[in-house]
Image (cartoon, rainbow, N blue to C red):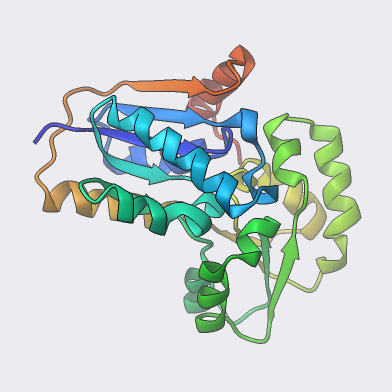
Length: 248
């Protein structure tokens, strides 16, 4: 069966997930929706986030997408259940912070960086209660996603120096609980040293491959279409640049 794949985030951060998905499933048309006019989701109410996500899914349905990837940890935590109940004929893939991956692979101290919305969600609390040890630290990065979205390098560097320097020498691993955060790995390393990173993009990519195989989906193109809700052309230029470049 022929299909397209929709992927969305509260901005361009989800491009980090898209890049991982393209490693194994290139022969599909991808529609990327950057909802930067409502960025950041992590500081919005659950009702607001659900409404944003519902409108985005309608956009994808109009473009014949049978698989939709929520490339936003906050949106996944707040809206995935609602979307799956409403759109039962679609495959909704949600991302989550790589708590289990870090838990399974290291007993060393781990810093989890995420938005307030992600930390406050029941989904995260259940995940953390199940997969963590005493060496996990949680840090709510209020405002960081927005700085990354605006590509304000000086403010990003100062933010990290002011807020996570206290974990230098304490943590060996960092779970990146927002899809924007992989874009600033080198700046995090500047503050914390040579830490190991974990994020949820590999899990999403593996799930996508499974759904495609199980349903015999066939791609009929290899195009990547970008739409930004703020109609900002600079977002589009940056999106395609990140797709082509190594941002680590």
